[in-house]
Length: 299
Image 1: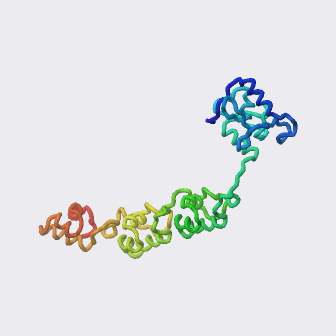
Image 2: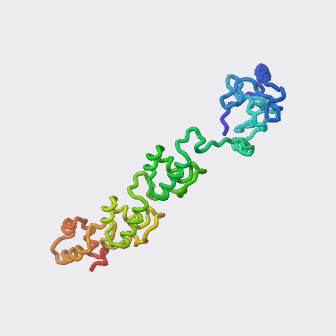
Image 3: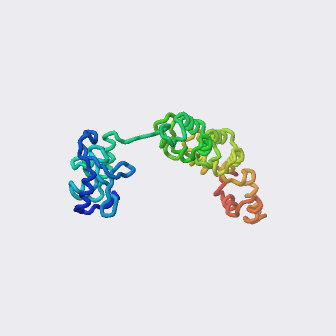
């Protein structure tokens, strides 16, 4: 809804007199030379203003009320002539904010200052293109790029996703959040590819990969299961959710220890709690091993 002060109808004679005293009907005003132009005080945006009933009202709105009647609730008073000072009856019409904007666009009056032409711009098109290449092709983090180019990380995110500087060159990343694009990420695209390749080819554990790349084993498990970094290529491996034994993401035991645990329990030498304390796991974990609910592939 348009928030504008309602204009009392009809206006007082002295208000009418003040209004018409500030209207110049001389030809030559406006694009067609036939506008009735306001000669009184104006707003900073170029519209005229008149004090009515103790309130400053747009002169074009007062003109509409005087010459055509009350303004429907929630509507703007627009100009056919695009002259903000015009108060001529047949040059005014009512419409919504959307109607007014559509009329502006249809007449090509919208002013779009973008990129380097904007006086507040901190980047050039060359820098934007370089930033996008570093993000998409080199895997640089948003916080690193933000520091390099002296802008906010949020600005970097919107640039690389094509939400800002749409006209500038450079590869555009998906507008959806990229896995691993968070400012606190510790891995790059190349690291993720290497993790998947190493796990598939060298038969190392997830714990060893976690130590090598400085992250948690749970993070490694998510990467291998493609719960994160899904768009990054790499060898397809069996989901860690179904990984057996020492290849599991949170495993604390090895396949060598399992037969000994089962023999120790079968011989009645120790309780579940004692065995759990010995191997650093819970008695519930020992119980599942004994019942072959876990480590079922180990004899």
